[in-house]
Amino acid sequence: MERWLKELLVKLKEPMEVIAKSDFLRISPRKLNLVAQSIKGFKATYALEVLKNLNKKAADLLILTLKQGIGNAINNFNLDKESLVIKKIEVGKGPILKRGRPIARGQWHEILKRTSNLEIFLEGNEKTKEVKKKDKKGGEDGK
Image (cartoon, rainbow, N blue to C red):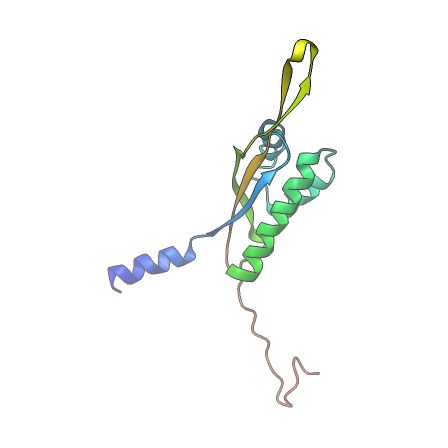
């Protein structure tokens, strides 16, 4: 077998990577990162169960983004839901909304409403196709 063909077959067997993004989340990156790092390396289905039991706003935002990534992996890349693993989670700073509060002598205390950008990298294997055998009569599995 030719060398280039062997390399191609090896690449096809490697797990695929899917990215789910959420931008401008109205939560501080510090608070979001606290919850995000607790699920890194988990299977996607297990991570959903863990996040459902956490009483944090960050957990709800992570659930939405994780479900988005799982849906992308299943529908667009034909990956198996059970094989999906959270490879990496990146939490970044988004734009900061500047608000303020007036204080004595015409001064102003600035209040910074921070936002976050979230990227979840999922890794998984393709689904294996199951072939159903037909009976001689034309029905499936003797029905």
